[in-house]
Length: 168
Ligand SMILES: [Zn+2]
Image (cartoon, rainbow, N blue to C red; front, side, top):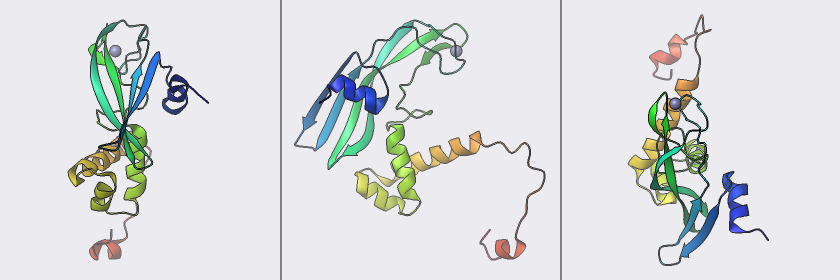
């Protein structure tokens, strides 16, 4: 058996000062409330370390389902006062780079399904609306494009026959 704090450490890769799980049987949701000790934060923009906490704001992320239950992580996200960048939000390890109401794990699950399933089907599967799912796919695709480096590309090949047929 593990405690909730140990579970959080394993699953979310953070050291939780406090963690609690509650289940809402009526709307089939699991809620994980996480508290961490916030000391010496690292600025997510410039990497400056040991910055004091400015304030915290309550946030909620949808995480991957637990069986038939939707799961949510609740956490007070801190902001720090970086000497170089000013007041900056410090996202927890489960949050995507860009601001999202979903965890990285959830978004990756969506991307995996998107290879073989329509966006509408994914939306129905997760009980979300399709513009929300499109938003995740677009953001992840933009992130992937932004991290690609085409600096060394000297020549690209285009199949003219295919592109004329609308395949390229
Ligand atoms: Zn900074």
